[in-house]
Structures are given as structure tokens and as C-alpha cells.
Image (cartoon, rainbow, N blue to C red; front, side, top):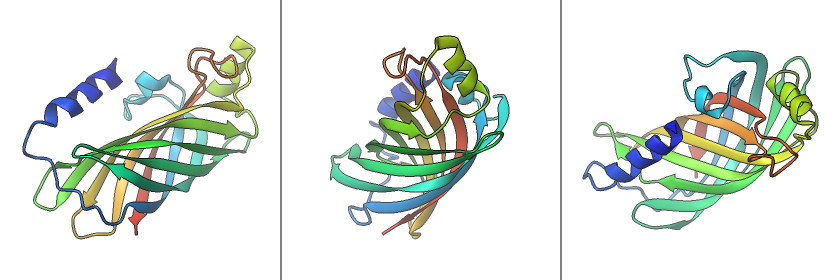
Length: 195
């Protein structure tokens, strides 16, 4: 429900004249990120401060390429990989479609840009914590699941780099994949370099 409200806000703000002018240049980027896996579902994990956390972490990075644009959105793809550190170390890779919305100017030079990535995520092992508990509960296999990642990026008009927060989310989509309803969520922060 919170995600729906956030999406509605994005579309309402689209009619306001505070949107930043995105340059068509530098549509490719590399990024690095790190974060902590939550013990909560996706909705509760959006509360970065109030969410419960496990002793499991993610660290890694990826690549984005924006290949199509309109006045309000740019579409492209993202690929990435993270090492999932904790009681049991595992590796995750993902690929998905990226939708990057037009940035909201918060000052003369600073812009906040929302994005969402939807695709598939593969892990080479089950991590102890919520993921293992849900796999036991549903008798599921979380090795291949859907990837969904809402993101907010803060960028400066005169810089090739920016910082971002994202919710790194894996789910079976109501038992569509792996007989899993949920899996893992991580609140992550990162650094992005455009070229």
C-alpha cells in the first residue's frame, strides 16, 4: 500500500514545473552499493529506521544502460551482483528492466530521481534468517525469484557521480516462482558513476 501511494505521488508531481531537465548524455553507469538485510516484509522494510534487521549484509554493484526516453521516463536495463555476507555467505546475481522517472529538483543544482527495477534474481544458496524460515514454511526454493527494487537517487547537476538508496527485494510473487511468497529485503546505499 505504501508503494502504491509513493507511485501515485510521482505521477501527481509530474504536472508540476519543478522537474529537472535530464541530459540525454551519460545514459550508462556503474554503481557500487552495500546494505543490511531486514527481518521484515517489503512494506515494513521501506521504513528504513523502524524496520528490523538481520546480521546479514549485501555488498556489490552493477551496470545500467538507459536505451529509450520520453518526457517523463527513461527505460533501460540493469545487471548486478552482490555478495550476501552473514551466518552463511552466498552470492546473488540479477538482471531486469529499469524505469527511471524524471528527476525532481530540490535545489538549484540538486535533484532527486526515483527509479524502479523489475527482473529476475538468482542466488547460489539459502541465507540463514528470514529467507531460510520462509523457504521452510512454504517448502520453497528461493534460488530463482523475482527482483523488484524501488530507488531514490540524489545527484548534482555538475557531477558525474551520485548517491542513492534502494530497497533490494527478492520475492516469489505469490508463489509464482519457487513456491515462495517472500524472500529477502535489504536497505542499501550506493554510489553511481555515469559515463
